[in-house]
Image 1 (cartoon, one colour):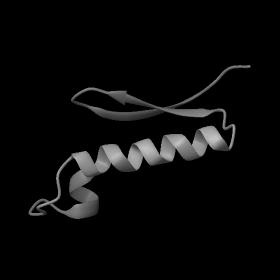
Image 2 (cartoon, one colour; image 1 turned 180 degrees about the horizontal axis):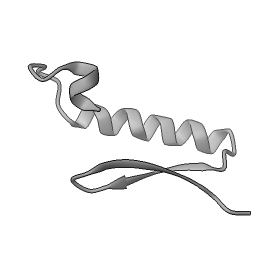
Image 3 (cartoon, one colour; image 1 turned 90 degrees about the vertical axis):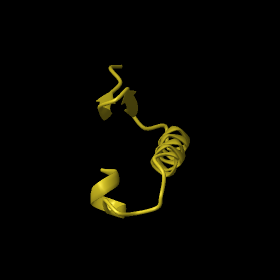
Amino acid sequence: MFERIWGFDSETTYTVVEVYMSNLRKKLKQMHSQVEIHTIRNVGYILTEESA
């Protein structure tokens, strides 16, 4: 995801992705969304849906 958005030669750090994901999680929580974003270390992110 990082390379697709900012490019391989970007000076942007991976921390930027973590900040964006954190903001997205907060917005999903505010909306009372059934979807959650989970981090899989050294792999990426996964979306899951809460079961009622």
